[in-house]
Image (cartoon, rainbow, N blue to C red; front, top):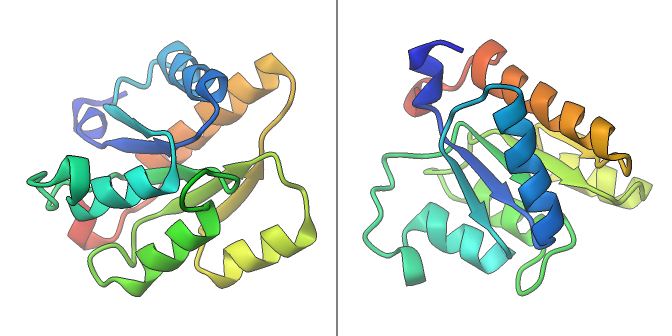
Length: 151
C-alpha cells in the first residue's frame, strides 16, 4: 500500500471486543497499515467525530476515510449515529459502511435511507470475516475516491 494511503484513518465502531480485534487483525494481515481508531459504543463514536466528551480538543479537520459501523450498539445505536452524521455538514459526506450481524430487511433499508454507503453482514466464519475486513479496507482506502473535503 502506498504511503499516501497509510495517512487515511479508519474508524471502527463495534461493541464486541472479539470483532474489534478480528478487524484489527484483518487489516494487519492485509498489510493495511493505516491508523485504526476503535469506539465501543455509539456515544463514544459521536464524541470522537465531533470532538466532545472524552475526545474534546481533538482536531476535527482529521476525519476517518471510512467508518465501519455496527448497528447493535449500547448507549447510542448505529442507526442513530448514522442519523447524527448525516445531519451535520462536517460529517455528512463521510463514507459509512454498516458492518453488522443483522440481516433484517428493515435494518438494511433504514441504513440506506439514513445515508449508509454500504451494508455488509458480518460473516460468522473467522477466515471470511478477515477477508471481508481486508476487502473493505482496500476498497475504501485505495480504490474509492473520497470527497475533496476529506482528502
